[in-house]
Image 1: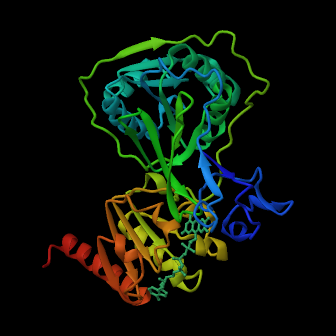
Image 2: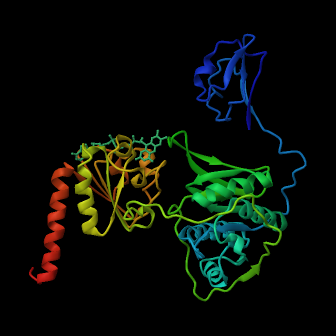
Length: 402
Ligand code: FAD
């Protein structure tokens, strides 16, 4: 879709200019004109009193044949030869999409061995395209994107998804560009429009204030990335069998060479995406020292410390602890939000947690709308009480006293 302005009807009143969040409408020769900033968000559609603004359907790229594409593919990322957890989550989502389309689910695995490919089958894949070539030992954009693009061209899947990880974010756009197709990054939900077989790619937009559904109706394959811990894993079937197809990496080369990998130094206790329990602090802590209390509770529970962006922006805690739209997406068994209001940008990063416990002194704080259990009160009174109770209950377990 795109926007068109009828110059005959336009009176140059400028009302539409203020409605556009992208400064995409300008007055030229007394008439409103749409410039290249237009994102086709349709916000301006109803503001013109003369009805001069309308939407038009764009024709698909000339000569693009989108028929004959079949199957759902998941790019299965590996690290050190082991399939990364995000790949199993994507297989859960991919299985659902493939079942809705009544088609096969395939995984593509580079740089790992046959046992790892079999694991992908047990997590839901019907087929695995596997290359164990040495060139994939360390991640490198060029061979990754070249081989995935050529496999897609050869087998024509209708959907290809990958993790929105540093690897996925780096090479997957190159694949989309090679294939001249669309790519939606950081989807929070994926489903099928059964009438058109289009993939509905849902993700937050406009700073997280709306959820946008994005389509690629004119090109195939439809490509999307999903962050780790956003999708749930599917069923594991130890007896499931599938086809493993060896893929040759012959002729692949790269202009760059990975000389070595250096592990980031720092707080290794902050593995938010793998944590089962996260205790997060927000601006309600009032002071960076408040994170000592958060860390004490987290440690007692065997959990990890998270944070809202407000505290990261204040410099109270490093960015790697940030949960939310511009931080990490997490899905622990228990998420304890302390002094966090529950802005939508924070919620999109944690609302899939199994149990959410919120501590906030404002009973109307939006965090309580997603909380499984809410405690209204001052965190500096409640957290020490919680710590005391947990310690006491453990002493009872140890001493056996009631
Ligand atoms: P506040 O909104 O200031 O809330 C503090 C809360 O603490 C209040 O509810 C208050 O009642 C409570 N409180 C105060 N004192 C106490 C006390 N003693 N005991 C108990 N409760 C108390 N935010 C993120 O978190 N993650 C993101 O990734 C993120 N990305 C963003 C991206 C964009 C494009 C934009 C525009 C914003 C983003 N934000 C993000 C910011 C977000 O909009 C909020 O500003 C932020 O989440 C607020 O953090 P907060 O809840 O800690 O602070």
